[in-house]
Image: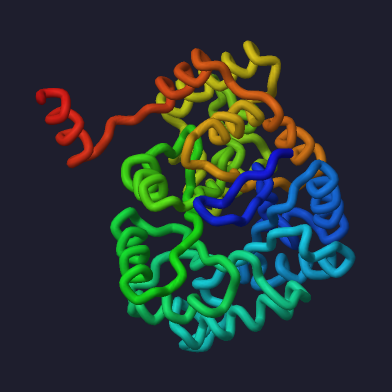
Amino acid sequence: MQQRFLGKTGLKVSELCLGTMTFSREADEQTSHRLLDRFVEAGGTFIDTADVYSTGASEETVGRWLKRQTRDDLVIATKVRFPMGDGPNQVGLSRKHILAGVEASLKRLQTDYLDLYQVHCWDARTPLEETLSTLDTLVRYTGVSNFTGWQLQKAIDLSRQHGFEVFSCLQPQYNLLCRSTEWDLLAVCENEGLGVIPWSPLRGGWLSGKFRRGMDQPLAGSRIEKAEEQGWGESWSNYNNEHTWGVLDALFEVAEQSGKSPSQVALNWLLCQPAVTSPILGVRTLEQLEDNLGATGWTLGHGQLERLNTASAQPAPYPHDFIADAQQRR
């Protein structure tokens, strides 16, 4: 597995990142540790977690595994923002909650330092300057997830204005079924030199190869079935439409042409995007991880990329459509 620089920093991370949201939820500790072992064996160095994943249990699982590793060989990332208790200050991006969050994450991860600390989502109730100034001296690198384009640009501008450390990366949803990330967020990242580490690169399983045109309900026991029950974004109701089936038609077509699995093609498509540093894998089993690891070491052809790009393209909203049309009239 190759190593890539995270944005314009000097930090190198593996081209695939292992996400741990499934740890202590869909994957027990023994399975989680096997997944971590196999990922590192394959050359992976980048591991992403969050305090809110299973209310800290994911970090604890990683921490018990981390004690047996050479710490400096790994890049450990975690996040802060969402509720970690019922108290009024146990949520958000205030100085108090961030400082408490860092201390708690360090303890759960059983490490002396965090490589990358990310704000998990925008917090409209806390002044951005308070958040940025608190992050400035805490960790080695900082990042952000689930911001809009203007929120990300404002954070970057304020950091430069006050001499704070600027975000090194963005963790957005980005995949063949969610390309709206390209309209503003990726443009900011490319212009400002932030790395992009997409979450849900297979959109909860929709791009894994398990779903094909003609199906009339989600697979029993799948994440999509659970998403339908829980009202999650990747639910069957949200994606059972012609656009999705058209993307999947193209995905299976390219997979057959290239001799790769659909999930490997979907991940490789992301790796071919110029702004992307490292897609975050969300796996429950060793079988899923082995398949995902096969996304590296090869590259989709130009025609295959065009087929996927065309099938997954969506009409741009205003003002993007208006500006594009105006540019063509020059």
